[in-house]
Image (tube, rainbow, N blue to C red; front, side, top):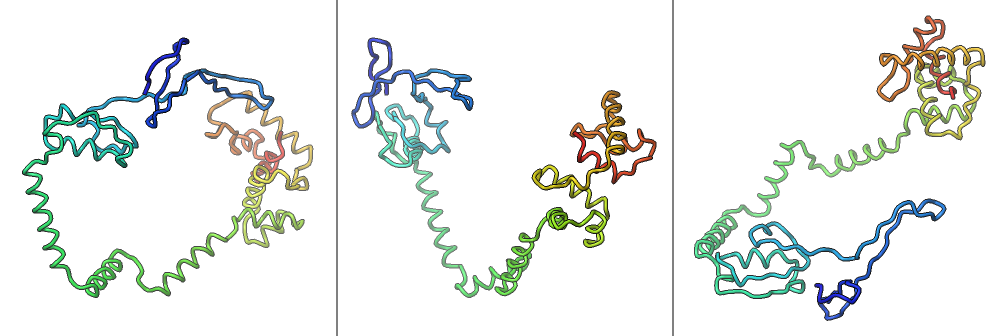
Length: 272
């Protein structure tokens, strides 16, 4: 707590172990990569304490608290307040009255009744074998597994599934081996359009991969580039996708269908 103030009006803090600390202003700043300050602020390195009623503290968990129970007016309030703390080491009790630690008679009766019901339930429970049998039956009805061998097999299947490579990574391996789009499509049993979609992903995720041999000739690139620039200038919302990129359909229509979708995809991969 703040015990006093210095001549410069800075707080002198007294800790729980009796030490006093002069809290002086500290500066925090955000710097760029060259060490230049972009923004900064100065404040006293203190965390504010706050007060709350016992009633409002229900449900809280506190490391430390200063508690005053000298004006307690209801039985059980003392328990509510003291049980907020993780340990008594963090407690500073300023005072308490005769009601603070009393327990309501109805609460005592309820506690006794709960104990009786717990004992009755414990005595009426079946033996461990019967409990295990019921537990297994419950698992089966919920769709769970009880056969150890089947559990192991399913876990192995799940691990093997995780190990499977993404389909575009498999195409990447074929590309690195020098296969053409047509050859990869035939090898994998996929369409050429799908393989081109994989190339689009690789352009973003693996920019170091050499894809230059798939670049369309400059005449086609220039043709598509002009159509693209015209559509961008037109700025018709119908020609754009949600991410702000042009739709292939708008390019296809702008070129009067003279350039196929696969060629358009490839052109867009290499379009600056």
